[in-house]
Image (cartoon, rainbow, N blue to C red; front, top):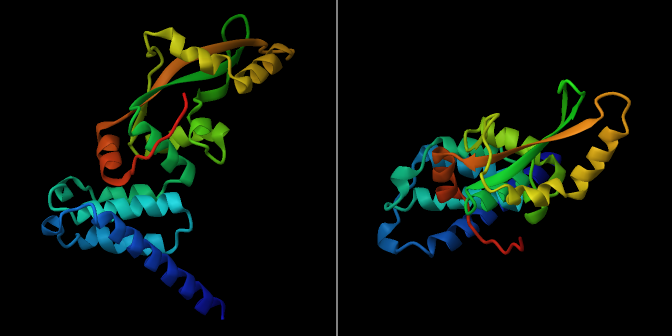
Length: 222
């Protein structure tokens, strides 16, 4: 009985995926629609059948539609399927943002002693998580770690930051950061908070992924 129920759920998921794909194909001239590569179509449909999150199914549908568009299909990399498989819904939302704003400021907060030895308390913080209404907006640093691992973004190096320092002010004055700074200052050891400025930017591979898989529908107040 459980097996039949699971099979029924997978069938419904595939039907939903096909309906979403058909909707996207309406935007492609009929003469440009071709057969997709089995390397992309088969795993995309298989993965979509066990995916509950609408944000992830949306990526698969866009990937499938573009793999069937003869104008752009040559730019569809087979690795895109595997990337989608390893994304969380929150990470899909972040990529939606970064497909427009290709580089975004970040800050890291360290707890240090007078000799500048210490530990990183918050790594690579950004307010994108809140702007995109992520389920766990303060996990943004972990999300960036995964996106960098997948090759779609790059984190700035130790001495890289934006020239315009004013863009870091909303992050430095963020309530989440201020609370952590207060906590550091009240510690017996490593009680000097130090903020390091940086950024994350989309890679050329990440740009190709977003152009193929990410549907941009943003309504953000910054």
